[in-house]
Image 1 (cartoon, protein in one colour):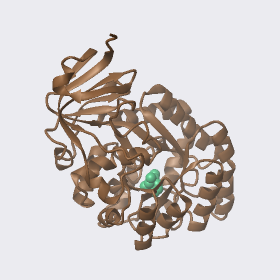
Image 2 (image 1 turned 120 degrees about the vertical axis):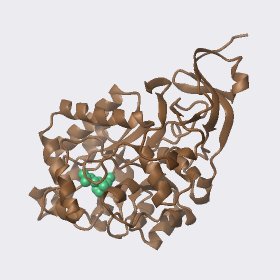
Image 3 (image 1 turned 90 degrees about the vertical axis):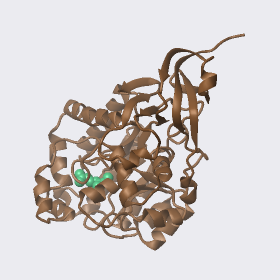
Amino acid sequence: EIKVVFDLLVYNIGQLILPKNRLKPLKGKEMSELPVEENAAFAVKNGKVAWMGSSAKAESVEAKERIDAHQKVVSPGLVDPHTHLVFGGSRENELALKQKGVPYLEILANGGGILSTVAATRQSTERELVEKASLHLERMVAHGVTTIEAKSGYGLDQETELKQLRVTKKLAEKYPVSIVSTFLGPHAIPSTHKDNPDTFLDDMIGLLDLIKKDQLAEFIDIFCETGVFTIEQSREFLTKGKEKGFGLKIHADEIDSLGGAELAASLGAVSADHLVAVSEDGMKSLGKKDTIAVLLPGTTFYLGKDEYAPARNMINEGVAVALATDFNPGSCVTENLQLIMALAALKLNMTAEEIWNAVTINAAYAIGRGNESGTLEIGKWADFVVWDIPTYHYLPYHFGVNHAKSVYCKGNKLWS
Ligand code: NIG
Ligand code: FE
């Protein structure tokens, strides 16, 4: 008889959070179910989950290293499916403008906002961007995140967009964290193209073949918003990208209701993000498809708005909901996905079960990683967090601090 010796055994788990994997995102009411195993254990081999069972059975399991979870909560590593991780500079000057009541889109129209980050990103070297993004990424990991999406969009020219995407690739080589890259070339209209945005859009479409050839991004995204890109421009960009084999994402219906959700559903986008101003029809069309609504309550909070995305209505319409930080230097300056979980409870009225599903399995599907991340199952990555909380209900309740005790990615301890 050959006895397997595992690399790692985690035992004495008070609550092991085991989101259901139905091979597609959990939709609507399905999100209210969150299976939890008490007195559980699991073992890891070669970075993957290789055995699961009770803590009692774990006594006879052999492993090179044994971790006592001390009856705490263990969950899959969190997934942050919408971040703008790579950028130069910072925009603390905008806080005072915001306090004076200057709207977000007005700061942008005056050449600030996204455009000021574009200037700083163009000036930064690749190395500087790697170093800066590393600090942000490590802070995300410290808060329990082991899989993230990272968008470009602070270049708005060939050289800088490709530089940002190469930085993302370097980060993926530097860390075991799973990083999914998204090309967001049409994130704003550069001042040089103010009067001919279509030419700019054509330039961005012109980059798609190169990005595909060098495998610099899996997804494409566009900021569909008043004064930025129209529905027609968004349809054109996303359709071209779809033909070339990219997965689709869209910054949709954030400030004005333009029909971005309807467009996302009709094109079979993997996700539609923001959706604060989504229409009734938009919600219904998402519910009919598997397009995931990625909600970003941290952004609504940070922009100082009172209206949040209608999460409850979406869930009633059968929409699959995921949550993300939207980490970026302008509209949501935090790496802390746990804070977003608290905002989801307090401002989106989501239940604890829905929230955990939204930052694990549904978030993984929102970036095409539902088959390898987002749940703890035999054969999937051993990405997990030992939380210093007594039950999973505790996390969204106690807000603004870090509850992660130790964070493991592909079986490696990344933070404690
Ligand atoms: O998702 N809405 C557009 N893009 C980002 C903000 C980027 C920025 O302000 O730098 C967002 O909120
Ligand atoms: Fe965003």
